Image (cartoon, rainbow, N blue to C red):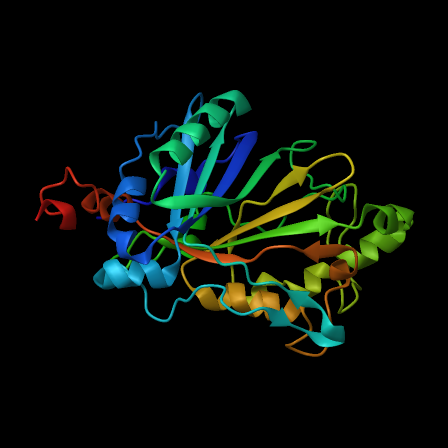
Length: 304
């Protein structure tokens, strides 16, 4: 049996930090993966720091091919939809996502991570996020209404036993900036038409437009994913960090194509009020796979 990284399902954490790294020298990729895998974090869901560690799929495949799901790739090309709407590709080599109950603890742990990777990689993207009104995003709507329960989520998020990458997951990470002025100028009934749900209690509209966000990301159509979205930013510059986990990359990619209008020619109405700034895919390996990369593990490549 393989064990998923605990941070994937660590709901209820109020502070988050997303650290994305690029290798300084591809020749040191083994040392890079080994160093990240050696980070000693408290795997608890309260009072400590939860980690999710992911790697660019091509990098992980090059070093651990037997533990890589087939066909998974990085976000290597932008998605250009109708009306020239574009989701940028900003793929990096590794992601370390920290979450916990207090940002000061995350801050200290993040500095430790960056220091440990000195000489191997550079921190190229850093985003901090936090909860807003319990479960709402900064549009004021409840986020993740169609998320599977924690009981069902592993079935959608994790690769099954007996397959390459078992207990691992494919993670889509994007940062979306909100066009606050235009969005808040819309009356609530018009906001609800854009979303396809009521604002107060998140009830799906019976006659929602085909362009609504709910229609364009319908998991019954495009496949189930496990979402861990969070707000980010400042008073004047803010938005949503989209975090989606799946056992298969296809639902994630299909959802993005649908939002961009590449599935049926209808663009997601919410993309007229939000702008994607980043886009990366990461493979999140099991705990056992990470442990094998540690230099103090007998069967690790560094120990042989």
